[in-house]
Image (cartoon, rainbow, N blue to C red):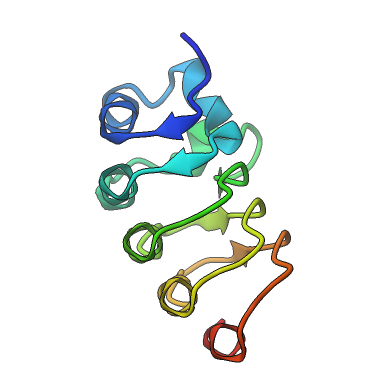
Length: 121
């Protein structure tokens, strides 16, 4: 199976059904995630990081280069470390949503952030 460039609804549903499939170890390389996929993954009871980041409990989506406000809201419900290191900027609403992540949030790639977004985080 080819490494996904976009995590869409179909890939998210397949992951929930079979989280140990090796393809999902490449989620960190995906450039995009759809709003629907983010919601499916966040609402699942699967410990996402166990399968997407070997040897860690980090749900690594560091390949993402952008994130919609809706996807950020969904991903804020993930109850484990969330890595979004490929993002270089965040809109205020997305930052507000991501501030609700219950575990650690990694945004090491940010280069641009408004004052309001920084205050949220």
